Length: 266
Image 1: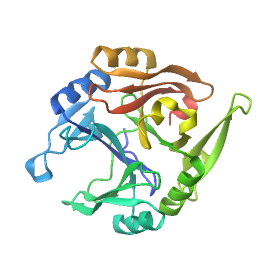
Image 2 (image 1 turned 60 degrees about the vertical axis):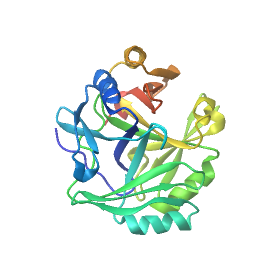
Image 3 (image 1 turned 120 degrees about the vertical axis):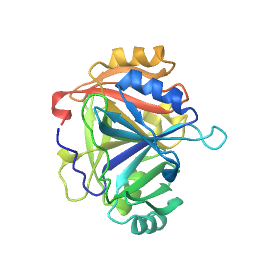
């Protein structure tokens, strides 16, 4: 399969911080078939989860007393230092100053104007994830935030994102999708969800949630529970989108799974 091609402003990397690398690896291997490629001391033990030999995610051990277990989403930046300045001007916070990761690329970590963590990856030798949109790999990113308009304005200033509204239930519910600058609606890569529309996710505060493609959402949710995780939002069908469920691994890292409708899969 060809490697994914990323453009500036879209997710090009995800990683997991977990207090138990062995336990998390067993969980995600059982759920998605991922294998661990351990990282050496020169990169602080930062490892890679692979799917069929292609990179599906990064992973690192984070002591429980230092930070809660969580997934992080990174967006492609042509210049991490310039993006950091845009984040500050837009009302966000720089948590991890732009830094070189050997010859692989350059990264930085931020909080947006509501406090949701996100990162940027400026690729050099490592262009980003090696597999997306296939079963067991990343598909979509969703931001849970107190209010959508301030979030949309923040990310427009930082990345130039544009938004579109999708109506469901005869207009009873509106979902806001985001897409890169100068790209059409079909290039949407994520969504913005206000807390009022998702009380279960609001409990965790502002955050990004990665979605992974699966062949069977119900079977995956059942397997997640068997492996020690939990289902935080029961599986449901969304017309013209797909069937999805929100899950958490045994250490509390939240994510979602989806079997997309065919038009959403590519």
